[in-house]
Length: 586
Image (cartoon, rainbow, N blue to C red; front, side, top):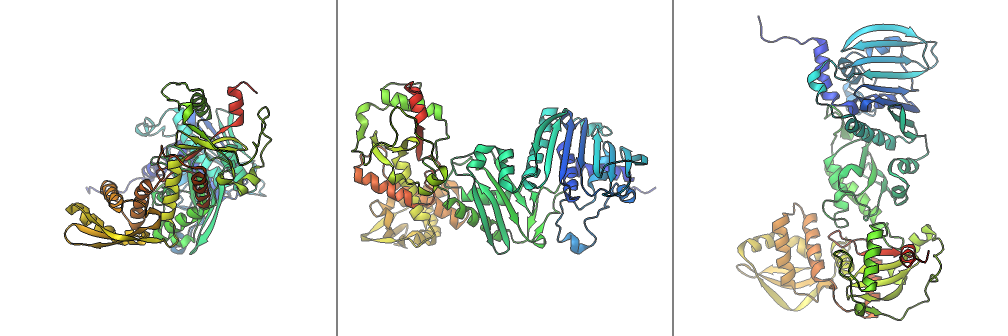
């Protein structure tokens, strides 16, 4: 007897289910995507025990005939594709014809469906892949799929399911991604007969994003709308001060399909690289639109991953789109008024009272230098400022137009704004200004040195420097080998003309050895960060009022006055209401 045998259909379906149906969230994803493909305008998902005991998905889509409903339970039976050409240009969410038979093979499954305009529908019951009952039934138009006791026939798989709360969390994530991608559909999620989410149909992404992510996040969104080379990017991003500790708030979609794509994620993070600290992530909802022929959605059994025909062009377009969008993002009066206001209010109060609070050392009063105010105070002491027109504030915002109060500890610039007290870290602010000058796309100005500076390097440093010479020259340096490990520096970027080029080069080479920049862009980013530290106003440096004004004007001239190049904040606002509460004036 031969050793090789053809497996029974039921076993084939159960094996396929291992690829398609990983957990209850995968069931919800597949069924909801089928409902969307059926042109539904209302979809309801109901769960018991986190989907482990029961999942019920009901829609008002086109429904199926009796013949089609039976065929839908056969493997590789689908209405989405007919030929290889269709497979190469997939526009629907589902297309393999594996979801229903795979789910039915590992559950107690029931399908109830009725075509629009039909007098009656079809009800089919399946246990572990075996059809138990088929009958005609009076049903409303649309489809209902009921999945009970997932993996009941595969105990080894069932024991790997997590507790109900964990499975519900996975389902919620899938549901919210679908909801963001389909604001034109009324979506509802229930658990244990209680409504978890109810997202009515709405016009456009912003109102749906407000429901999914909250009004505060949606209120900070800046639009992205860009197209190049047949790749379109639309959606919303948040300013750099809104950060998360993981990538869960990066919602990426390709042709309406939610994807987990490292290439796209990296492109987004690159755009924010000099704006947020390493290990932090922005909040973004981004939709990419490309011709179906240019993207392969058939590379992962659960259709989570994709492959682009021209990945370099796609990622480059994403970065360009986000750079352009971020350049238009301006703080209203302070981009950091959201960060830990209560803690900051206590620390500020301690600073002005000359006390210590916890581990926070207060600045002594004598370190505050006041300047003659340029204009009368905007808000009376005993009155809360009138509400601000946020739209007008966003358009007219300028640090240099705020009333200059003075300098705190020769490190922080104090300004008065309609929102309250604004503190600016002068070193971080100047770092950002220098960094923007070095890393901008415009032609950089070079400053010839009166005498060439010869830098002596170790062999490893010399090899690194030679490999980076083209990037350094692009920034405004003029450097040539001078024999052995020596290099002659004839010119430096104009913004660094007052600083020692040998210190900048040595520090950058130390950075490059540790970070191993992979491309020219990363090399330039690292050099700009290193140089900006050397070419910046220092903490503890006393500044005259005229010098502060010039610093603020330079800060206003750059695209992203949010953080230093290392991602640390450069400004913070203590709102009036917090100051009034501290002095019990509310």
